Amino acid sequence: MTLTIALPSKGRIKDGTVEIFERAGLGITSIGNDRSYRGRLEGVDGVEIAYLSASEIARELAAETVDFGVTGEDLVREGMPGVDEKVEFCARLGFGQADVVVAVPEIWLDVETMADLGDVAADFRARHGRRLAIATKYWRLTQQFFSRQHGIQLYRIVESLGATEGAPAAGQADIIVDITSTGSTLKANHLKVLTDGVILKSEACLVRARKPEHNADPRVEQIVRAVRAVTGGSDG
Ligand SMILES: Nc1ncnc2c1ncn2[C@@H]1O[C@H](COP(=O)(O)OP(=O)(O)OP(=O)(O)O)[C@@H](O)[C@H]1O
Ligand SMILES: O=P(O)(O)OC[C@H]1O[C@H](OP(=O)(O)OP(=O)(O)O)[C@H](O)[C@@H]1O
Image (tube, rainbow, N blue to C red):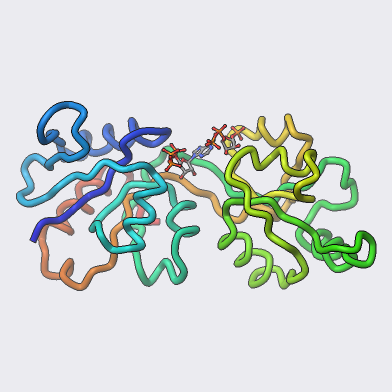
């Protein structure tokens, strides 16, 4: 059986991934020319590398069309329900860090916590004639955090595929859920993170689709062990 590992072909987490695999002694050779989107793992038979974008990798893990993937935890958790039954976060790789956060306009001076936001949401329709609108591309993580963790049910999600931080100023939404790393985009848009508004501290991870055939395959353990050995043995 061929094992497929999906690795980022571009973007923020590409370089870190190549470096981790090299340090782990899992060298990659490309099949065909340098611009090829397929590769092989040196020293481990029958392992194919598929180069995809970070979000495609999350999708392929959900569809179980790949055995392993390196991508952001945020994209994997957003991409499938019941995520921990479907995939294993084998190793946290120490780069691609970003927090998925709830941020509100800085001028909401008396809103500092999710409980404060819950009060705002409860009054919102009476005051404004509509529900509190949240701009995000992380609708699953948002629903889990608001409805399940904080019991806030009165809101509406406005899907945003880019420039989410601009949505409140543009009048498209009242607050946002988005990724932040340095915080400068939030600041530039006069938004602040609620004190208990960090939904997820994400980073790049080695993720395995939980397939029954992996149990009897020594290559699976070999790959996980090699990567863990150079990432402090962390397993998410
Ligand atoms: N400042 C940041 N902004 C956005 N994503 C970040 C940031 N820092 C780290 N990441 C992480 O990088 C990953 C996304 O990587 P990247 O933006 O390179 O993907 P991509 O190649 O654009 O994918 P796609 O084109 O499929 O959207 C996410 O897991 C995200 O959490
Ligand atoms: O906290 P910061 O360091 O300011 O980073 C956060 C911002 O960076 C990303 O956008 P980017 O402009 O990189 O484009 P993208 O949305 O296409 O990833 C992300 O979507 C945030 O908007």
